Image (cartoon, rainbow, N blue to C red; front, side, top):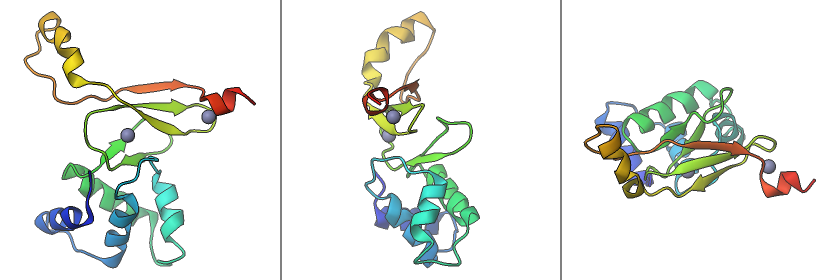
Length: 139
Ligand SMILES: [Zn+2]
Ligand SMILES: [Zn+2]
């Protein structure tokens, strides 16, 4: 999980400047479970940081992702979404409302594949499931 202190330390270690906008981006991602998009983070912070650009959101999240502080989800072709939970897990996206929810998938349950496919270890997972959420299919 991303904590603000760790995020700042990682940015410093990578030689990136610690600006108030970058701190605000990290703060807005900290502990979040709703997988916000870059546009969503931008819109949320824009009122308080009028000079913020979407490019800053992308570059900051890129640095955080490189430091394994967040995951960048490529679940949708049109938008990127962010997840401060870096533990292995899968995701479901509703095709209609675009809501993304966590799907717990235990990496150790995949152990049988190791023998079948000549794999020596499995330590991460990227699974995207698509369909309709129950809210949308009730409409
Ligand atoms: Zn839905
Ligand atoms: Zn997630």
